[in-house]
Image 1 (cartoon, rainbow, N blue to C red):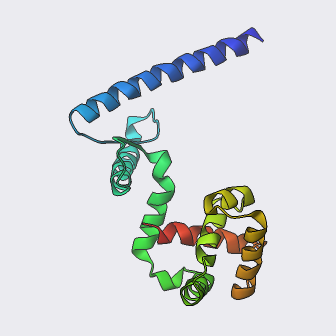
Image 2: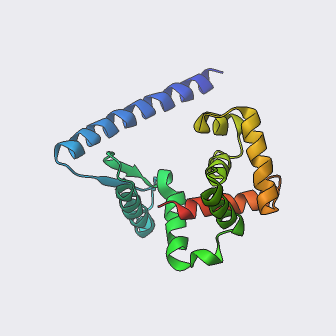
Image 3: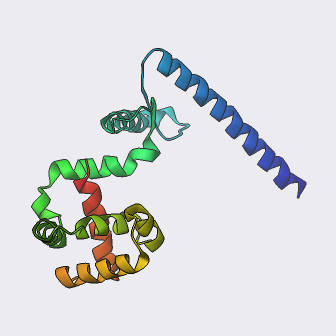
Length: 175
């Protein structure tokens, strides 16, 4: 048991050390109005091209977010990096599910928020409580909207592949 305690303490000390170094680097970057992209950790210089790419992508995507951050970590933006690559190579009509256009048109015609509801629901990984809080609506209102979305689109929100595609679509559509 003491070996486990020693390793835990060592990990906490290492994390504290890294956190203090990151704060020092952030201070210097802010001072000189600079930004930095950070790759995954590596230990083989022969792989430097991979990690250089990651750092560059972290910086590019991080800057495009219009964030006040000065350090952009690749693991935090990897999904956006993947989606921007797909977005640049495929026309939207080839990957966007028709349900999105159906809901967009219905919302415009009827002054509803079914597409917004669906986006928040899907991007919150179908968690009702997160969606209810984000939309400031009652749980019954959410359940009504989800049922109506299924009726309008003819698709089931119980279908994992449909939900996965929608999740990708919403990431691809956001820039």
